Length: 477
Image 1 (cartoon, rainbow, N blue to C red):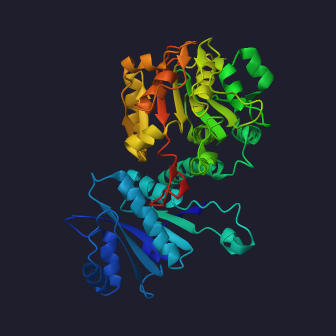
Image 2: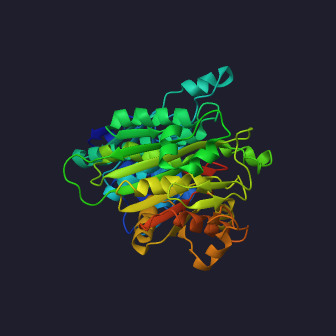
Image 3: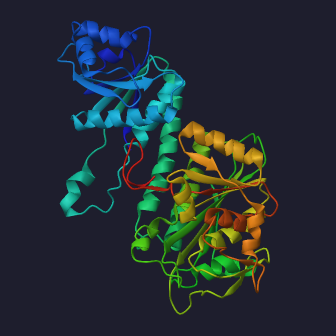
């Protein structure tokens, strides 16, 4: 992650390789900084801006050398659009502009905040910092120079230092959580398995003052967690349920919340085996668990006032003489029996036990995250599919997703479809056919929400990207 430094003073007298200045569109007056810079450059900047067709629309940026007329060697104008324009488009615009500055050779880059409000500063920093992510851990001798490249330093220049320090600290905390999740999702399954995921969680717990319990095979057998145990049987690395607890210092403002993440560290499909191409991304089938750990890592530094239980359902879905089979019947932690039609519908099985376990911790509501169904990605592309049995929880998640640029769409829980899950020789089947597959999977999970307000985020389409764009990298998002 880049270094972030707070500076007071005039951006145009701040020595740096480039200074980034936000320019709104359709403004009835030129921003003061732009006017001052144009004056310093004897009107040449205004001419160049006009010739380039730069109007301040979101997504536009324009780099110009200042030729010694001011302290920064270059200026990057960044279009911020209208006040009511898409906030996430502005984040992407700042991220793109930061790359333009870095590609031009800038290593010390200033962000002028004097004419940005608090929301504008936050959007700029989120775009710049999140867009800086690079996963270089496995680069070898052919790319060692790339791996060793030092990140740029960003100077956040303004006059209200207390506000800038608060926003910068919050953005850095969130970015560390996002980067942790991205690193985990990007790691190969040869390095990341249920055991090493538990070790990662233990390190975060020690660093952040979280309680942690790792439930192994004997603990899960004692609890009757037959679903997660079955999924993990085929691997030499046993499954585990990783339970993290965040308790805030001081005042608590509401009842506890439960976060549950699917963490299949590699998914072959089991005996319902995937085709070779279908396995290429299956090291990322633990993105829900990574998201939960990333969130848990940020709570204390953000000063969250609610108790939060983060439960990560970790297993490898492999093939061996011990692996579970189509036709098997499992018993979940709440006593519900499950007839297995497909061993490739394993995520909902580990979540079944994870949801029941989390509900029994005294939480007031449950939110699970899972790369659960290809059907969700077919329906919504890279938009997250949200299912919920409670309008309040669904509404709060939709509102939050809009604020942070996570495209999310609420999908129906069609209760009539539950008949497709009725088992022939057990309570439930673990699949109900291809039509409405994402809905069927969500309805299966609802059986294990223990009557609590519950939301399910199917992130099969949004957890990874086929190409980079804005502050989203190719790979783990």
